[in-house]
Image (cartoon, rainbow, N blue to C red; front, side, top):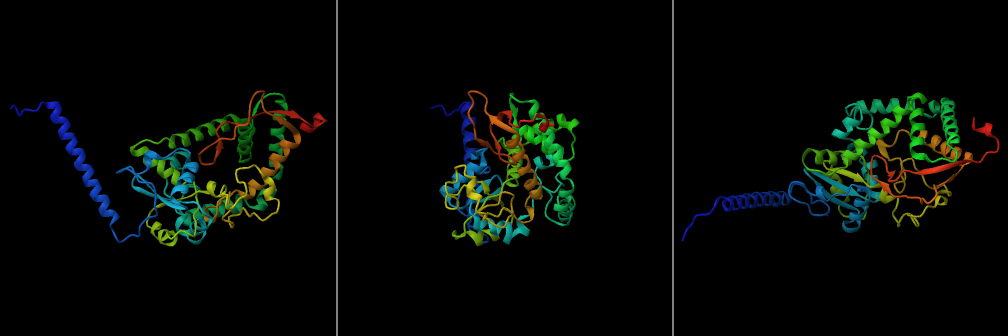
Length: 370
């Protein structure tokens, strides 16, 4: 019998042996790590692959992906994201522990590549780790730039920019308008960029959106790591005190895991909200909902030290802008179009399809649009 094996077969055999050996070593290491009694067991979660963990199964629409996993694994669960451990919580009780009770620890942030690209090297108020420099930036921002007194003094600026928007929309009467884009330009102007730079503002919006979309592409190697780091610092999610993992794992998380607080899921939790998926603004008329970060059933601006610094500005601009648009125009969709409310994940949740509508002036005196 000829014992000779040709080279292609030898290559396949050797490759198979190497792959099996590496897999066996990884399995042994994983078993050893899981049996390490120094750390408490992590919450349950979907099983991942060696090295990459759950990275390859992530859905770019993380808010719905995380919510669906919570239905299987409960209000606090674990994801292995490469070398990082992610903990997702989806109930108000655990969110309170993360964002208030242990806020000093969880306020820290590592700066991902995307954060450096989109800001001043990650040294701005959004990405800066919690510490003296961040506290100084926050103090300047809140007390000097966005305080009630400061915002009151620039009322005329807000009024001027809104009136400018109304004039522009009046000039577009009967034609289609991208409402989201137009309101972005208005906000951009209010932050110090004057009308002559609207082209730059529009380019800025597109560039920033492209950075976000690039980070949402799930690939391998360095890009996966950046994707993970970026997302771990963009979204916050919540947990439930009923789980036996809560206190044990919050202590373990202080050693280096990342926590997602899924506010999107909490704000659609049927145990908190009646018919949560229905558009029902009347639910807020009783005045019991506090959006200043103290009610962990409802915190659209975040909570704790990292709560949005621009809440007071948003309060003023949202009502003023919306009231002006509704008072000045009747709005309709283009013929044959239907309203698409689907959304896409990002630093803020955006409509997947832009809202394109047609303004029709409703005021009898044209001079009111000047």
